[in-house]
Amino acid sequence: MNDAALLNAIIENAIDGIITINNRGIVDSINPSACKLFGYNPNEVIGKNIKVLMPNPYRDQHDEYLARYQRTGTPHIIGIGREVQGLKKDGTIFPFRLGVSEVKFGDSVMYAGFIHDLTKEKEAEERIREYALELEKLVEDRTATLRKMVEALEATKEEVSLSLEKEKELNQLKSRFVSMASHEFRTPLSSVQLSASLIEKYAQNFDNVNITKHVNKIKNSVGNLTGILNDFLSLEKLEAGKTEASLHAFDLVKLGEEITEEMQMVAKQNQTIIYQHTGLGSKVNLDKNLLKNCIINLVANAIKYSGENTFIEFNTEITNTECIITVKDNGIGIPESDQKHLFQPFFRAHNTGNIPGTGLGLNIVARYTRLMNGKVEFQSTQNKGTQFTITFEKNEN
Image 1 (cartoon, rainbow, N blue to C red):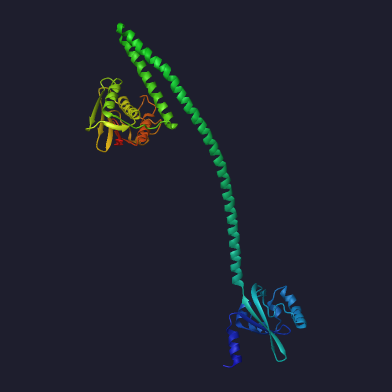
Image 2 (tube, rainbow, N blue to C red):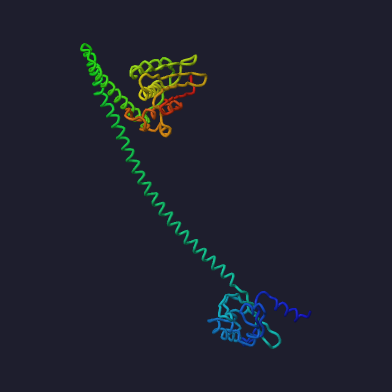
């Protein structure tokens, strides 16, 4: 293959478009890639001014540019290359990279243009630009949303701080009121209790059943009110963090016997509290006052929620590793649906009816038990009774 044939084969099969023009701008040749790019057949372009492939303003400026170059020799595109626009046969305008070379052979001069289509690159750039704008808009929107959220959080934080401050003040007022009211109520209640005891003493000579009956009612009412005040005072101290466990060694059996004797006096008619201890030892290392309060609370509940002519089992046990205290009754029991709420403050099972109570006792028992690093558990069946078990790990220090 000679050089001319080889050059022609290269031009014909080049990926980019190649167009040659003479010094007057007339098209001498156009390769297949350029024809495909502009949508023309070769015979529709060859012999015509290259301006047919240019949109304005390139079309109007081309002849002057070519003439100026030939006069001055100063190139604007020739030998430099630049990004321009082309005009297809169907009127579509598209971008391409144009490189122009001046070719001299003999006395003649011609110009070869090399055309690289930039349509896909420009479309990709436009998509990237659109994505960037969308991303920028999204960032702006998110930033605005975050700013609003931060402002809302700041406002909420301020509101919460004010609310907490108010709640703190209210809690302090509540604590002071509960403490004051409880102490103030104790004095008249003690007077009522003393007066009832004196009436009972002075009325013995009258041997009047009704007097005894009503005196007992007064005593029971005073006892209930005193229990309520004790519960509120205990809760107030717990909430204020004033209650701490003070562990020391004492005789558990002696305490159990004292509680049994004390609670038997307030038991219902023919209710019997049966106390039993298991284990070779009787010494424990706990807070005696807190433990006594827990046991009295559980035994008082057993008395309150059991009928007359019943037994209440109160057991203590000391093993090698644990101290276990159990209070069991055959009373009304706790409905299964209420059992999960049992240790919440002010909660009372729905089957308690008119039986008096504050709903604080078991909450106090649970919290006192935790202060001594123990745990409280229960099993209960409605109308068949309840058993509470308090367990402490044995601590002899």
